[in-house]
Length: 297
Image 1 (cartoon, rainbow, N blue to C red):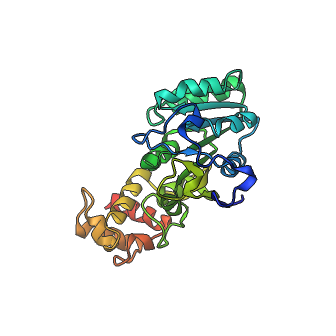
Image 2 (tube, one colour):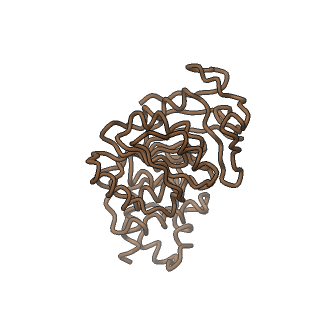
Image 3 (spheres, helix red, strand yellow):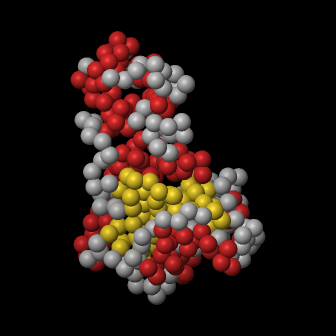
């Protein structure tokens, strides 16, 4: 899968939308409170659509379609496209923009509250679709909750292709057990394989955010990356480890509710983990061992 970086300077494939006023989007002004930054670079749009794997056999769920920059090209490729938009003022313009497209449905809802399992089951069964692809330009302030909801509670999804702040994306894409990893790295890699689709400079958006962005594709695994007795308990161990990442794993895990220094020391010994290591030095397999041994203690 290709990974490129787009910016205003490249003007790639005729991306002439930069600097367009709000009136160029049907009078719609981006909402600061909702973290809206409308994607306007045609090169990035093309990379996302192609990189998402959307095809005629796919149910595509677009999160936060905004002004519809991704919506129309996705609709051309998808078997059926469901656009989930929270902002009241964007619903009618989206319906106008997609008028006459029989394979497009606009849902006015918060993605964090939507029953995705039911939606996926109903649409795939009724339409005979074989794959489910999620695509979106996520509000940066709720990127992690949205990704975790998709990974943990929505069954049947094959891949998630999403735009996010580059710093967050770099953490997610990092290999667990490396310095670049963080608390979000481990649950994502537990559920999915991560690849980079493309990068986008700030000027690829209106208004331009203060940070650059990256698009990642998460391909969900048939089975989790490691065996563990309780995945949520393991994630709590990871979170504790990275909440004070300069502390040793012994000290950080001991701060978890229900743990004490002696039981943590015993668990680490059984797991064969050096208590002087830090969270960023531990692999997903090692966190699974720590979690299991703590529950056995």
